[in-house]
Image (cartoon, rainbow, N blue to C red; front, top):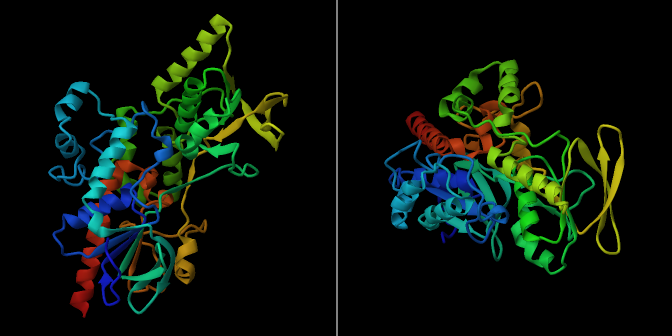
Length: 424
């Protein structure tokens, strides 16, 4: 693991080491040693949504949208090179699928991360970023004491944070879906009889199916405001919204067109479910109606009302949006599959954040190269990988454009460094 060097100013210090900054680390390593970089990750090792690595869940993006292929199809860090190294390339080809399981893709990410261990400090949580003369001090809490790393550019890729509705704090009986596999074994010891899943997206549907399988003696109640689960639009023309060129289209469009694109194509990514999973859940419901042994209950056009603790679990109230009817359920567990929000870099940037320029809606301005626009210019770069949907479109926090975005950020860093050297 790299050690801090008081005299070294890194070209790049990355905050977080999930897939986005992993893609950037690969791009740096393939640059040939011309760019110095270090990545700080608060986890003790690489991990990406481990709590939802369900055995049969598949990726919703093609394996070709891996960490490198769209940027450089010849890279040795591609998913195909991973398969070859694991002696599974032919097996995967015979599988005739563009969509590996989530478990396999996570193994690919770990495989790539292991090759970059000399660029990463695990167990280091960034707690502050402070301006200096022409660079930034990145302060990270390590296993022992806080350490300072100096950077000409900082790249934030802190990912998404689980979100639960107000009034539903996470606890022993209220989980976010991201906690599922971390905690489900302890739940099994309680022999649960009734479980509630809140949400209408892919994670909600996956959790509903998983709990229905895992606990055959329990009732599972799915609660969502829609009439039914909505299918994801993964048709070819709609999928072009994730193309690298679509970022240019979105960035250069007027504000009203940006909003139109988000409204039109939100069903490619937000609160939607794979059609096969929708069909599977419907078959389960219908089968139980035929046999009369109901365990899977769909509360559509409904919302979750008050949730209170009881001596044995929770009492959850489900309210109909149609007529206001209320159903009280005594439950052992409530899983909030209510999505994620981009991590907020403002709590780390302090005074620097106050220099960021804003648009008419108070959102930070971000250049095409993902660099924050500040006034005055601090003489160093602050880049965002995530939290740029309002400027760069739907791919802001998704894997689809990770490889190309990494190349664009690296190119920006190199070009700006060269410009500074010339002016000096």
